[in-house]
Length: 204
Image 1 (tube, rainbow, N blue to C red):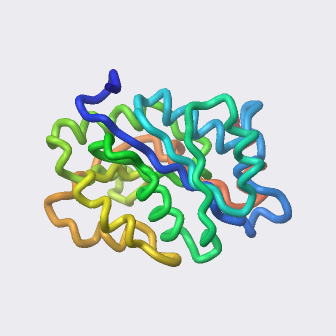
Image 2 (image 1 turned 180 degrees about the horizontal axis):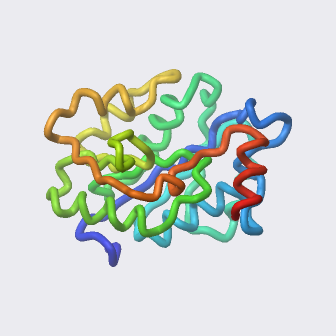
């Protein structure tokens, strides 16, 4: 069992997109701090106490196998990756074992994520007896990722299709959603363009 949570947790790391806005290169394989972004994010997930990590690939499966070869992850190829993020979330959730009581859904392009984010969200999940969705938000209340989902909502995630992400479910939860505010918004900065990557490298 994870040392940072009373609940066994999984994570679905999304690496199935084509990163078209980044140009000819795959943004998740671009290096930050001497390692590919996807590996950097995966290391923080593992360090954050997650018990099972599924990485959903799409456009460049073999490249991710190489980039993540030294990490305790299981890679799942989503043949329908071009349909949109919903299909990748669904593929990852369906690939989780029966063990996790909850799972993070983690976009792969968040290079500033730290293990402490996962530990803090996991603690809130445990405090809620594993029954609520735990959502990181900014000091102003804007939703960020990764979101931690209880197993009771896995069927809804596994049914997602196309470009519909988990937000379609978040908006229906009422008091089953718990927001956890973070002051440091930089933790959740994503990378979509070469210009954003250049700024990240300059400040890393």
